[in-house]
Image 1 (cartoon, rainbow, N blue to C red):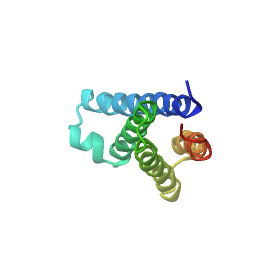
Image 2 (image 1 turned 180 degrees about the vertical axis):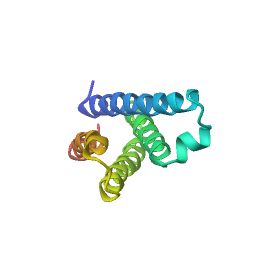
Image 3 (image 1 turned 120 degrees about the horizontal axis):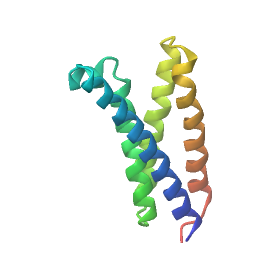
Length: 121
């Protein structure tokens, strides 16, 4: 297995784990009586998280499949996820709410840089 495919697997696993966490949070809010639109859009962090992590997941799977466009899909998701962390910081949210996003954004960027510096076979 090539380094690029291992990085793709790591991106897919992290993206899938984050997507699952976002979906579980939305599910909890809906089960407590909120509408789906309120759970996703009040505030819109849940929607941004689901879109961003979905793109990271899809990008990682595409990289594993050897598709060149996978890194660009993953990059779009990483940018959105980083934007999410930045918006949470800028809005003055408590650090306990955005620290995980900031740290995981760093991990995603390290994985993406790994993709950029490794040669395609």
